[in-house]
Image (cartoon, rainbow over all chains, first blue to last red; front, top):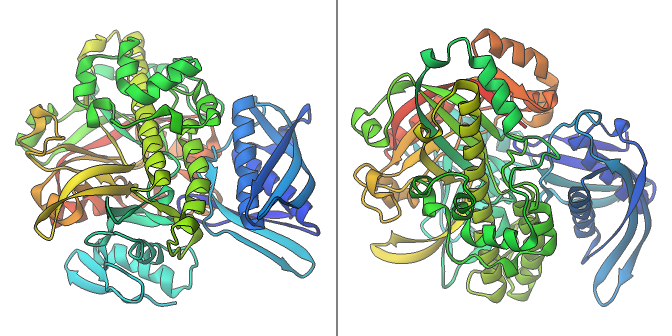
Length: 142
Length: 484
């Protein structure tokens, strides 16, 4: 169970973790799309490059999730697989993420649509390294 | 964790000003509703509404109190059901005070039909509405827009939809701001936001959004009901939705802008989602112009859906589209420039209402002429299994809460808990047994919206009614509910 959903009355919290920071970010992507569709039903047909920047790792997590929402929406896609190529310091005071999201065109019937995620927020935002795992957490607006 | 709470009157509770708070917190609730909020704090629940109310009370320029309505429940940054009014000179503007679904709101249409008129045809009508009004993830709308057209929607709002033939001038008369708020500048909205908005004008969305056919079951105020054109047994249609992905992207874009602004202007932030900018700053003004674009997009969206609703009624029942008239259209996720009395002086304020409905009283210039003697209609949505209310604004509401009311029942159970407790299919069957037809694109979405996951809407509405900040006019029950 590399991610879990946290109880929040109106929205939904996600917590994702893994052995490396890059993998924890990828788990976060899965959690996000698991809110919206049955990701097991999504096929890996095409990939989209994703890059984003933020001041710190927690903000980069929100940025990554929001970039995924934007790209999926504009390209009318859903994603199921995520790979982070790099997370590195960038410029004067930023971190930059380079990643790939894979999936296919949204098919509401086959993908068993659930609930639309509006945006990842800074609420409940947390990043910690504990017992050998990187944990990332935030609340997603439904 | 503990929060001091004082009962000021039967239905008003106060978090006294302490520490960094610039004003007290003030909550309109009965004993039972307040107990639920206090229990959350006592159980050490990290995400709770009382802490959120207290945090908002610390934001620069806040006036009178950090207010909360009876439907209050935890949100992000601001609680849902929260009101924060800020001085335009010294105050701030915040994404969390508006929400990502800018101008999410309700439009209610009134028909001249009664329940008997659709007897035996309910299923046909439900199917026609479900087919005609796009809903759910990935749905596309009636208006296919180019980039230039999107800009027109952002500037003109519902007016643009009417220009395209989706409705009539009268719809605009009975829409808040006449369906078009001023000060919208499309240059403040990103290309991504516009691209996301291309195909979604005239779509319902998902989550708690719905289109409901309702029947007026009770009239509480005959005079006001007459002014609003409501009668017992009448069929109404309520449309609950917002600015769709275009609005969500505006929130996402400006969350980043305001985070830098909070640092630039040294605004102390107690919780990261509460990032904000001084209203008068360049960043604050840009966000405000973008919000106005989002507000107009939502007005256009509900206008287009109203048009589709009329078409569906016409094809299913042969009803003349002209007889389906707009009662009112109002947002409940907004930041608006308004004038209010503070310490007996009229002040310009930027009023954030996050899951709270404007409820202006009689005589206010913003209220349509036809309703001026009564105050504006306040549209309070219930759940798919309970009921909805129509109230009117009051003078007392203007004095105490910047002319604001509850917006809905307010959740008590999380979406995760609801899905564990209820199954979508069982709910659809149970409600069918009670004569309510549910048409949903997602059964798990239906489970998340189970009536039991919400507070009792009647209890919540009774608080504002008995406190006198808005008064009950009519109550309606659902017959058909279309969900995303």
